[in-house]
Length: 212
Image (tube, rainbow, N blue to C red):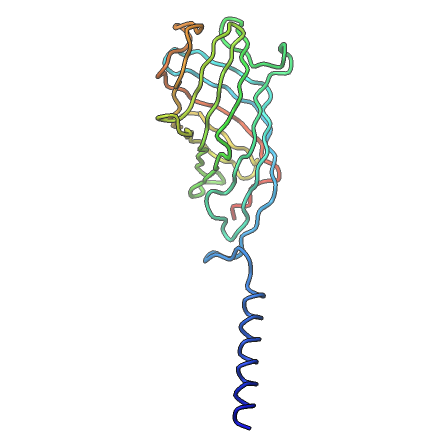
């Protein structure tokens, strides 16, 4: 009789353990349940060679990614998984460079993590990392821009919560982007290997990031 009772108790304990495991919440963190949702980004961009002062302007920027939800959401709050840079009014949709040169920009290094810090009057400091891009000019200039040593670069900026706009490259922002490779077709008055670069963007994120 005692043996039967003991077996029954073991069975109850095992069943309870299985139930506890199967009903545990997924993606739980110390900050609460975290889920993700897709986002889109739209706006404009200007890449600048800070050493020569020359710029490349793109009137249309689009991107996709995923954002984290939480209470509050953990960093990075979003991962940008694709980006395109173009100027539809130009031939081939290439961006506008110096002296009438058109430039095709191909970003890489995805995903690009987007992180934020504390709120200040509805605006939070932000940083976008993992940035790499290749440039091909209509003058046959080929160049690549990355972070130090060819790793993904980082630019800082802000995220305006009410407008849901990410802005980088403005006053007080930082960037560790550099021209890693520049071929012999490139005009040295426009770009050289080792030049410091910045990426100034204004991107509306939809739906807005949930930071509260």
